[in-house]
Length: 544
Ligand SMILES: CC(=O)N[C@H]1[C@@H](OP(=O)(O)O)O[C@H](CO)[C@@H](O)[C@@H]1O
Ligand SMILES: [Mg+2]
Image (cartoon, rainbow, N blue to C red; front, side, top):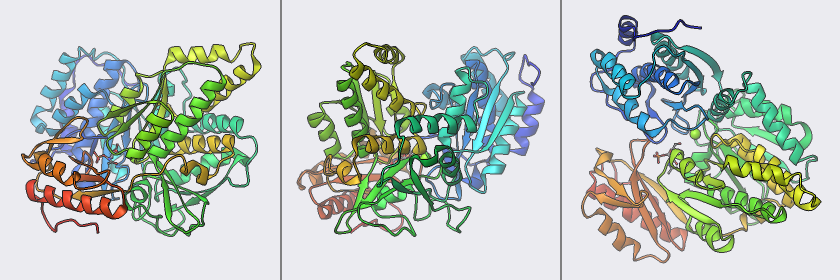
């Protein structure tokens, strides 16, 4: 353990800050999921996030996680995010400190740190422990070291878990702070594999799942999970950089499949067989298959949320249990999924801004909150008070009701509540399909998506676009929203919105309509409008 400190050791911090010097022009902000950018421009940010994690740990008197990953971004990028004690994303007020600390000159670092200490009333005598982990990017090793240098500079202790998926680091951070002092990667596998094996005792004929791991950290970790699961499921790992020569996220992974609406590279699909994709740090999951005419069918985050809601609702009814059940989505959710949840299942649906921190927060308003981004990032949260109610139901005399309560309890234990987790969500999907004796065909028939299209527009400065109403409408630049409104009015079931990305240097355009042709055409027209009114650069984007 490092010795307690009563004031910031200026000399030590400044010496290491020189080693991890900030390029003079660099200005970055803590975005949708932490800092992201070109890996070779980020060294100072990682060092400073090590510093910040120490203050956060002292402030919360708990272990804090720091994950080194840029998720679905290209291999050349990297990123860093802090994980709060219960495995949640960093509290939003601290994102402001993170941005400030990332952008000050080296000479102002000490002032900024002292400022946070004062504002948050942090006792520097507290011990600080930080868990770190990284994805498979070549740059991640050196950038993890920069984080550890930051931790050491402020006298914190770091424990490096090495290669891990993002949800694994969330899980071990949460478990350790909940009192499981031997929380480890191994305890992650044991927990989820045991939960799955008690839900699925025998594999069914249709349970071969081919998993595209995006050539990322998900591949070796899924292999390990599979070793713990034994004979309950057949998994085939595809796009594993350890055995092939594929590049991280290149023409593969959940983001590629969702946006391109096509299979990842090298996958030969058969009608109605089961396929899914993780993203680069394995916190997103999408399923897909082919129909009998070999049309590509995507079962994305919206379909997963709908399947979860359908199943949980059934178990609640069987157990005769009341619960405030809600689903949280973003504007990217397909209109048909929202209608299905509201009109067919009669479930409350909330729409919040993009970024799981917003969804997670809102989900906690419900006894059982299911949240998913359409891209496949999501999970289920359960209120502690309601969990107790469920536990008491499992011991009631009515056997059928008690058994249904037990099934729900076990189902909830296969979910990683701390954060969306591709591996645990995949187990949850497989457990539901097994319980219902469904294949992808039955699952996909829950509702039919409205055709949609997403596009990216490059502009000189994406901050010229400002949004409101959970990012569904723009307020700046002037004329853009009016233009979008009049285009949307020309399409049957038209819907479109634009927002600056928080992880890439682009403006995202989303469009939905009655046919794919119309969705493409609306997306093209809105993209062109963004290009003209928001300072587009390079070639005008076109999807059709
Ligand atoms: C449309 C879309 O998929 N946006 C993604 C993407 O954020 P942007 O702010 O849109 O770049 O990355 C986030 C982090 O992974 C994820 O939470 C979010 O859903
Ligand atoms: Mg990710």
